[in-house]
Image 1: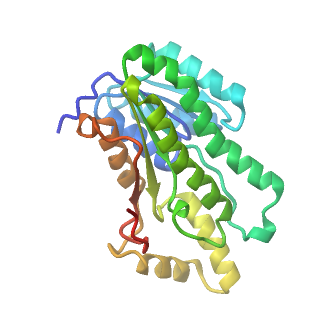
Image 2 (image 1 turned 90 degrees about the horizontal axis):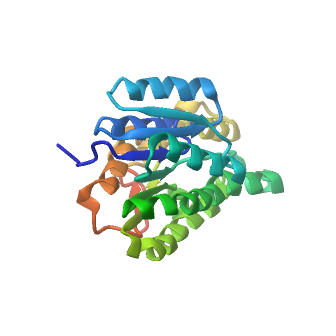
Length: 263
């Protein structure tokens, strides 16, 4: 299926591994050129090579998005290299699997800076470039902790709720510029980060990681963990003409695991 994205340009934060990598490869398969950032040059270069193998251009940029000056450099250098910005995927994340009493002020501050503030700053910095193009798409990768409580992911819940709220606020702000802004809340996703969570849960419960994984999968009606490719497919939808009139929305990609009815 042709999603009419040939030769568009996407900027992806946290783009070298996991969900970000899968999103980059998914968009590249549709002819999108990719500017990606992350903190590790080696993994960025590896992912960029995978993207280029699909016949598009890729520009890896080392950047720590917890710092405003790094974000400004990433957006400016990416826009200059690609000569355009059509899509922004805010995906950078960090978290520590620990209960509330173990989360320090620095843990809170760093999580807020790497995710919520970085998403806000990236959106603000790409706005002039998208206005110059006559429109654009912004997709924020949040998390299901925005809608549920999770004892070992308390900072995630607060930050992801903020991401969802910002998504709606910013969507209304930029709608008259033909820019859509939407949010994806991944459920339990098969990445390195969930393995860290399983490890802490197993430690606290005195059982194996395999048992924790089995328990978690049993809570998902569709019977498996979410994959990064599942999140990439939803991102592709939001970036495509199929979602021309969709903005300010937060959608769960969770296999049906959330129990709340969200109107």
